Image (cartoon, rainbow, N blue to C red; front, side, top):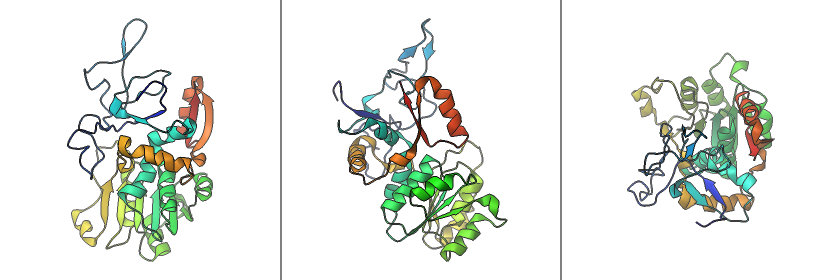
Length: 294
């Protein structure tokens, strides 16, 4: 990399040398994988930011991007085509890559298949976009916010379920809609009760559930081991199983060619000074992604 290069910061780094990076079946990195509790640089355990009076300002998720200038390890920076529009490419640092990659790389959604997505934020809608581009014939969106259905319809979802509109469990509704359950489900809500519904909404024998939501609760998986003998599978996905430095440049090229619809994900743009307002829009479910201009 050189001064002036266009780059994407990634929270799940790739050094390229460790046993993890050399494994084709993993996108984790021994030293630079996502680590929510690490707040310093890996090499020396120190900060690169400080207040005017010398107090340390800690790093966040290997990137620390809410700032005009930042310091990242080279393993967490991806060089992309200089012609790529940065306003859209910033979406690839997290949510869009995570959701779309879960459909492409983790589940490997097949043409003509059926999909249910629980939670229609950016990650959930990106999973839907991934399913659409792979030719899924039925994409069911599940959310308690009906306003999300408008965006989902514009992005190719075929059906929607609001759990608050029915007394029946969502998985029963989906099983009835699909003749036994969907081929793939994606849990993007970070709620264990929702995770169980997503798991049961898949078809016995071959259904796969991909876990994408962040779960802060100390509760364990709401699944009995014997239920796995029914042929349903469940798997987690970090960063959509993309190897950041190896695969993201090609993904960026695909987006530049229009193979993926990124425009729908940017719902707001604000000056950086209104960052708190941007976070509030997200918290209230009124925004997918808000671009902050420095």
